[in-house]
Amino acid sequence: MNDEFLTKLHKVPRPEFADALYKRISRPSQPGFAQMLEQRLTFRNSVIMIALLFVVAACVYAVTDRGWRKVGGIWVQVERTYKLTLEPSTPVPAEELEAQEMDCVTVEEAKEILRFDFRVPAWVPEGFRFEDKICGIDSTSDFAGLYWAGAQERSGIQLMLQNLKWFDMASQEYKVGEPTIWGPVGQCSYKEVQVNGQPAVLVRGEWDYMQRGFAPSGNAPQEIESEWDSKAGLQLHWEDGDVMYHLYAWQNVSAEDLIRMAESAR
Amino acid sequence: MKTRTRVLKGTYTLAEEIDWEAAYKEFLPRVYNFFYYQVNDELLAEDLTAVTFEKAWRGQARFRRDLSAFSTWLFTIARNVATDHFRRKKHDIPLEAVREQADPVPLEETVQRNQDFAQLSFSLSQLPARERELIAFKYGAGLNNREIARLTRLSESNVGTILNRTVEKLRMEMEVNHER
Image (cartoon, rainbow over all chains, first blue to last red; front, side):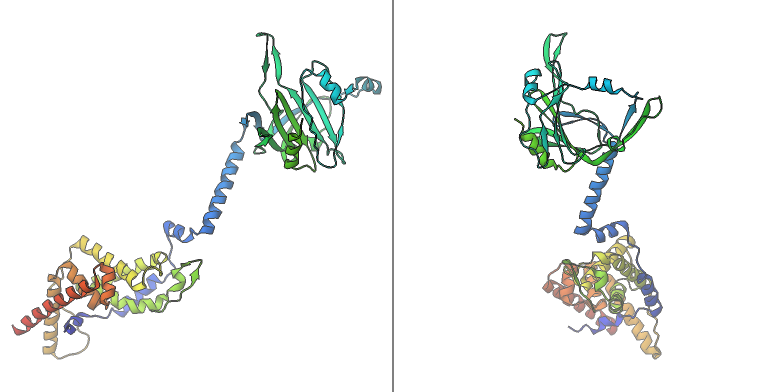
């Protein structure tokens, strides 16, 4: 193809234009948002972003997580802090203390006395010893407490029993109360678990006034505000046969062991 | 064009690949002439060349070396710039545009050359847009038929056929002009 004549139009760009353009484009570019996003949207960054979003969502949830929640059919009251009032106490003479000591009975005796039936865990984590006594109960009691002593102070396991069945005088009928955890728990401290296939609530921690050991001073009631300590222990709450079980452990017990203990109740 | 390639978790990053200075040296005259062959106006060709390189520079992160050669990518941008320009301006090549000659040549030769340029410019301006673009790619940018085919989505043989026919048409017009 005789096409040499077509190259006659060919022209060399002016050097000043070439230099000026090169200077302009070789400046560090300021990438736009979309470009920046495109450049940085790697798999790793995506994972980090998603994780951050979860953290932010968790923070938002933690801040807004207040009030009554129904977890696995059990009512849970969630609070950021726990305000309580310490009433001034007057020293009690020793003889009066002796007189105030409660009568205690064995589990078998308690089952005869109490108006509700209950189960006792047959398995307990190693290092805990069952104290076969239930104190301060009579035939009208709707509450009873069992205790497994640990090797150290405040290291035991406590099981509180609560009869949910009550007699309604107005209708002259027995009714069953709503299963509820006693007292408020801290934000994001609870989750639903299963005990023998039934919903239960596992709570991590407790209010720190238990450790801080507040003592009332003076004659006026003392207002204290307690913070939630998520490392201070474990609680497990479940309902079985119109009885609410509240299991508390403070040290050396894992959530798995606490659930296993609950499931061994018979 | 020299490129330094580096595989980074399965993808390429252009900023570390392209020897931008070498690429600029090689492609500046080609892009410039691609435009000059279509608009026959030095300043306008410079403007469009500048727009092309600025777009390429800004969009370098979008270039995927595994998908296209740098020249194809750059001339795709140039083609889009040209399309935008013609769509906006409906630009006509000025017939009076006669190139200034820097080198001293005899007056008769200068006059003859200027007439040739003017005639060639006029003939180019009379071509349909597609043929004019193919001529600009081939003789302005110095691309081969395969590269032009890739850019224009025509088959390589089709590009060859159209170019042959167009060049023949232009050559005949030039010859007729000389005979006058």
